[in-house]
Image 1 (cartoon, rainbow, N blue to C red):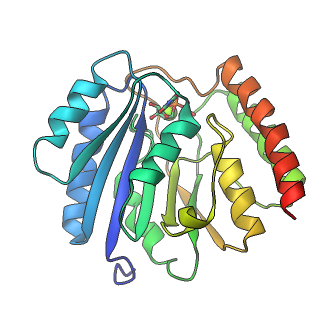
Image 2: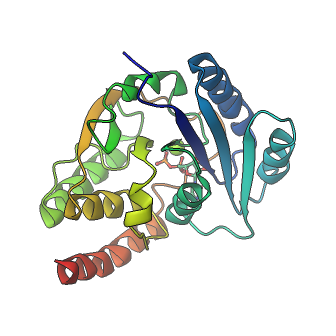
Image 3: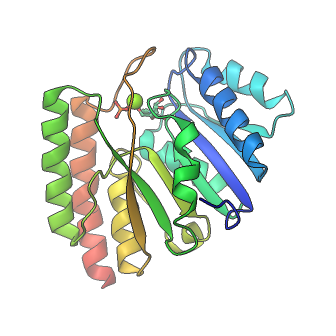
Amino acid sequence: MSTETIKSLSVFFPCYNEQDNIERVAASAVDVLESLGIDFEIIIVNDGSRDNTAQIADKLASQGKNIKAVHHQTNLGYGSALQSGFKAATKEYVFYTDGDGQFDIKELPLLFEYVPDYDIVTGCRIKRQDSLVRKINAFCWTTFVNILFGMKIKDMDCAFKLYKRAIFDDIKMKSTGALINTEIFARAKNKGYKVFQLGVHHYPRTAGTQTGAKLTVILRAFKELFALYKQIKSDK
Ligand code: UDP
Ligand code: MG
């Protein structure tokens, strides 16, 4: 494994009400990135949290460990949080994982050996720690959008992804909700970007509340999906 190809990296975490997770997640990222010896920045994207996430993010940002905080005044949704993270990123590569600690950032270096041959390196959860209903929903969703956009992504919404940052100068995203990952993959495919997929571990949430399975989140994803499908067809 080599880190020679990655000289600088932005790492960000979308966070909605993650006051009991974000400190531990950010500390683990600092440890991993310092040990790799690369130029890095960490961005905490506070998506309008109603708990103390904002205060904790600002406190971490004031401690001089290459941590920045980006705040949404209100909760704008997962896609908006990812968009703000990509926009705030300044380094050559950008990686994100969730601010709830369901992934282990120590696995980040596993992704490095696939750049620069690939533009996106994306995780696939080895044993997804979610309910059976959620796993069935995710399987149906992934199968459906893969067919719709002619893709072969195994785990669409796995929150463990590394990108060449320049991709986001080229791809403009519109999704504000959970459709965001599908949108990025579909637009990246149209532009000919190459994707590598590899297994990563997934852990149960130990604090805070998940919102990814809410009906409003699913309905918003379908609404945004129709708009995306029309745009992508007209772009061709
Ligand atoms: N999140 C966010 N904005 C939202 C909803 C979620 O930034 O409107 C964050 C959340 O704090 C977490 C990540 O996105 O870090 C994934 O959310 P969640 O854990 O609820 O989804 P799941 O892991 O269950 O798919
Ligand atoms: Mg989660």
